[in-house]
Length: 110
Image (cartoon, rainbow, N blue to C red; front, side, top):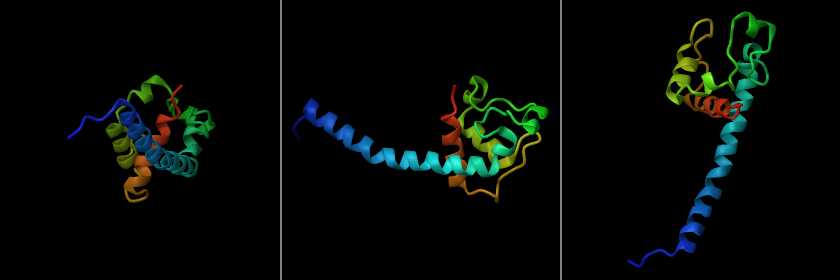
């Protein structure tokens, strides 16, 4: 098998990236829609917790280092099973919706 030239590797990488970007953008858009519908009431439209309800419950800013440092698995578990005063979304959201939410929360990084 011949070695792949650098230019061929770059072209292959660009092709793979171009194919992956639309699905990533779609997941983030879906996550944003779900966030607005299910989470913004408490966490605020921008995830800062800047609602009267959010601040009174002591919610952290979703874009903060503390929240962004939580693993995807732990965020998924918190959304799925609930945490503290946050209700569980198991059975209310699909696994794909929860995954999209986690992806969207990552875009809130400060």
